[in-house]
Length: 410
Image (tube, rainbow, N blue to C red):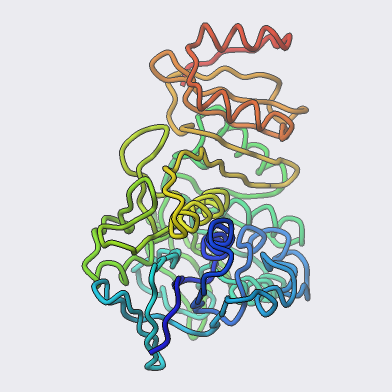
């Protein structure tokens, strides 16, 4: 049996960030990384945006590290197309699908997640798909360019980013969403309404407050049936209704799991010397309290590095305030904190006309910010959300910059 000082199960951003974290503390320890896919770790946000739009784009453009980086690192072994099927938490050993077994002094689970699927008639038809991997993006890129109409199920990140991307390559899209608002769980009503109008102005059609009851077709998709009986002719449907964490490895090993593998503030699971990071981990939220699970790029990068440093012996509590970002049409959007259902909002600037910031308030305090085309204010907004100022203190802060914001409820 091979033995390494560190074993990392997973081949995404959290996994490679953990390598960086380990090396900051332990420059010489041996590391093994097991990735399901054939590629080394790559960035996923471009899969629904730039990479999808660029016909023939090489996957190397997505890679987190430069070409041959993994081969050049002393003491680091990357095993691609290598799926870990079992973890023995007591023996600190992982078992792979090809029958191999590897022991680690410290083990990290960074297995990410998988798209949720709709368990409805026709869900397995050719032409009904999800987007998660580079291979998915390449396949859907070609299918979309041949399609007369695409139905996007879900008005979240995948659906709205693909609506923007399809518009840019001249493909008509209809977005179907159970909620009555665009990104209704993520943004305040003011922002959701603005994003819907902005998308409609770019040719996107919506069916809000509606669900999909079936996909129909002979051999391949020909129509999408909504829950009110409407039939939408389509030859491609992309389902983006959320993600499920790949936490089975931890659950079967006896680790505490609740929609993600539970870790402490140091990234360690309920089994000694076993850690989890990124999309698959449920961690103590340093700002809101309680346990949280976050599925965004910035969190995977920061939490992976944090877990790696602690595996190397740093023993540091996680206190990073992650943000998420998206880019749709001509809008660059960055979000800090809790912005889904604020009691009040204060808006600096005019949405869609130059930089604007939406300050989200609850119980007389700032709890989150939405920045639209205002990337220059990211550091300031991050610190404001961490500080959670009262409305009075926030108003004083805005006055210093000469801002005359408007206030809205809800």
